[in-house]
Image (cartoon, rainbow over all chains, first blue to last red; front, side):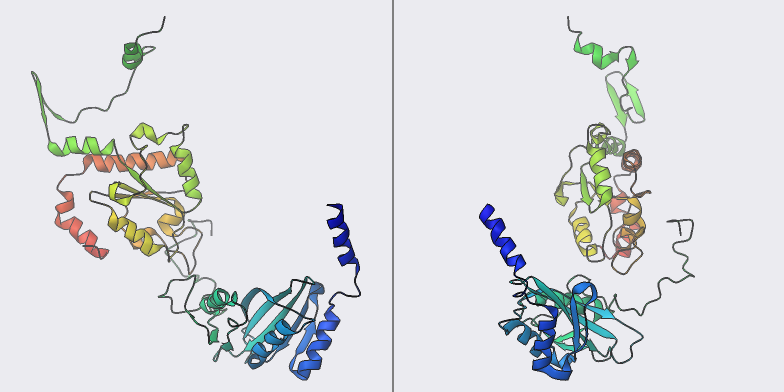
Length: 183
Length: 193
């Protein structure tokens, strides 16, 4: 037990070896130049953006690079920003470097009228269900996905429920009045 | 010395034990005549086999109802079946998502006639607080319901009350009802033959 604990402390203390946000940013800029933008680090977690047609190249680089090694896809989801015309839908990848225990966020934006994004299923098997869920709720069309159909909602559903394009509630509804459910 | 069994059965400390009353009929010396539907109703209502379809907190209340304190066994319904083929009463307890709808309907279709449905709680009856894209706004959109129990969740007393309402329906039901035109129309309105 003592040996294990010491070993852990040694790893944790060797900060000059650890992968820092600055290193990641430098390597990305060295490789992709102006394509990667909007670097920020809210709560210490590096976050950046790239054009949507570059998402696979970027993910592949983050995966393959011997120093970066972001080989674990923690989660994947979309966000709808109705005010940002031409880039309404964001697809966000949360990546994890398990060796150095470093996490990053990577975003691509797309027009809601052509929500086509290349699938990450060939790189991360975990992306399969996550992309299906993202399609289910936001209607992001993942090009090349092996089985892009709804995963949680009923198959008959003809809308994407998490898009911010629905009024919260119709004030004129009479099927449930204020006397019920404390409204 | 232990007191005889008769003491407990006949008058527990002077109290009369409540027995189910016989149906209306004609009594003579050594015989009793009544309607067949009354006898069938009496037998059915006191030995209902419930099929619990519990999806959320209402199911927990139902477990309390099944337990020793509230004891659904007093109503002849302690035999909870998990096979729709053998059960008489479908107890739907909890939120039914739209995706669960066809499953619930399938379970109902697999039950043999006569069958009754009890909808417990706000969610099963109306969608409850889940007024949203993924939740069925009441199971009566897909299957006919006999008794609704209000509450979120209802207390076990309310469940027992709802169950007794079902018993009332079962006891009074004509044995020809399920062959009737009205019943057929009801089933057709749900697209069930």
